[in-house]
Image (cartoon, rainbow, N blue to C red):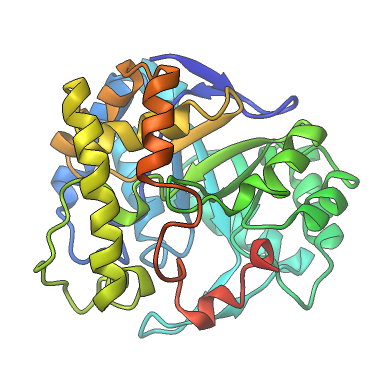
Length: 334
């Protein structure tokens, strides 16, 4: 497994990270034993970066990672780096009701995460969405105090725009910005990515397969469970879905010409965007993980990149990446 550094002040991690959200929430039911086995397989393959959120399954995901690390070989366990998002407020029924970035809340969230994870520190800590009622300086300042106390190693951000990125970086060193980035979600390229690079901040990219939409495995007649977020996602609806799967079909032709899968082409494209970008793959099963790992072996020549750009040009996707109420929480979209 190759490695990359998240920004000028962040940690050196595996070139691919494992996004663990789907093992606990938002993508329908999952298999706990297979989830643990997948984390073990990722660690064995050299993946060190595990990404989670304290609100994924209301703590379920952190407990799952705890279990996986406790039962992993010592060397792999010690190499693991955990990135945690916090701040989302939820109801018993699972609805999202906002975000809390107050300094006292930051420290409270951290205390619970440390307990659930069974660790004495969190490698990267970040608020999931900016709390509009709390200046980002106060939220980042609270994480900086956790760093000084030894409870957190690095400060990250999630889904923030260029202006907020600058304000946060003026308070304390920021390791990376976690944000959606894929062939069909390229909004960061205009201002956010250049600003991150100017400030020496890395990018951990989630949604690199657009939640399975450009994985090559999605079918037009697939039925989604009631607890699958994608059932409400605009890109998975009606004509939008048809248009977006057409983009995946166009990618398939390129993938077949190189003897690789559609998912591998899509992940390899994100890897090719720069050494400061670490794609997070959201594999929930070992077979999907193995496929994703193969992307690291794919070399994209100039002709390949040109063909990919022609097949999936910027702005080609149909539909927003979140429903309207969730888009409203994205500082990165303002």
